[in-house]
Length: 357
Ligand code: SF4
Image (tube, helix red, strand yellow):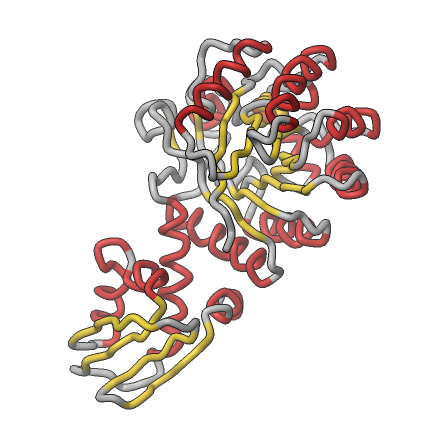
C-alpha cells in the first residue's frame, strides 16, 4: 500500500526570477507578501511542519512560488543545505522545486543532485513561441525541450506546468502544447488555466481590451481535453487550477478569468458526464429508472456537484430517476430493470472524452 505523502511548502516568491511574465505577481500567487528566504526561514517552516505531521507519514519539502534554480547560487546552496540536512536524517523523503526552462543547465542540475533534489517542475506554460513572447516569458520552446531533456538525463523526476488560455493562444495551440509535453514524457503535470491577477500586466491588458480570458466553461472544456490526453498517456496530473488560498479568490486578487474553488471537480464532472451521455443517448429511456453501478470513489464525479450531471441527464433524456449502487471492481455498469444497458472500464472514460469532442 502506498504511504501517504505530506508536503512541507516553502515559498520563494520572485527572488529567483529575472523575469516579469504578464500573468505573474508571485508574491500574491503564493500568498506571501513579505519575502524572506534564508536558512532560518526554511528551518523554521520545516520544524513547524514536522511537529504536526505523523512520523510514519512520508514528507516532501517543496520550494514553490518562484524560479528556484534562478536564485543566486549561494542562496540556493544555503536553502538546500537545510533541506538536505532533514533528508539525510531521514525526516523527509523528497525535495522538490519549480523553475523556468532557461534556468536549467548541467551545472545547476549537478548542484541540485548534490543537495538531494528529487523533483524539478518546469513552468513550460506553452510550447508556442508566439504565445511565449506575448506572455513575456523570456524563454522559447527550444529551451523547454532542452531543459526537459537535461532534467531527465540527470535522473530527476520531471514535472511540467502548462497554462491554457495565455495571450495569443487558442484551443489548437493549447492542445498542441499538451501533445508536445507528452512527447517529453514528464512524470507529472499541473494544468493552470490562465487567471487575471491583480497588479499584473495581464490585468492592464484586460482593462485595455487587449486580452480576453477563457470563460469558466471554455477553461473546463480545454482542461478536460488536455487532462484526458495526459491520462490516456499514463501521465499523472497532480493539479488542475490554482490553489484556493486566502488571497486567490474571485474578487480579491483574482480580477477575472476562469477561477473556481473546485475547478478540478468541474473538469472531472464534465468528463464523467460525457461518459454517461455516450452510453445513454442512443437509447429510449423516457420515464425509466436507471441504476449506475460504480466504484464508490467515482460516484461523486458521475453525479456532479449538487447532482448537476444527474439532473442534466434526466432532463435531456427524460429519465425518471437515476441512482447509484456501489461496487468494488473498476467496471461501471448501467442497468434498467435489472437489464444491463452498458458497461465500461473506468480507464475508458478519458479516451471516450477525447473521441466525443
Ligand atoms: S518566471 Fe515564474 S516567477 Fe518569474 S515572472 Fe514568470 S511566472 Fe513569475
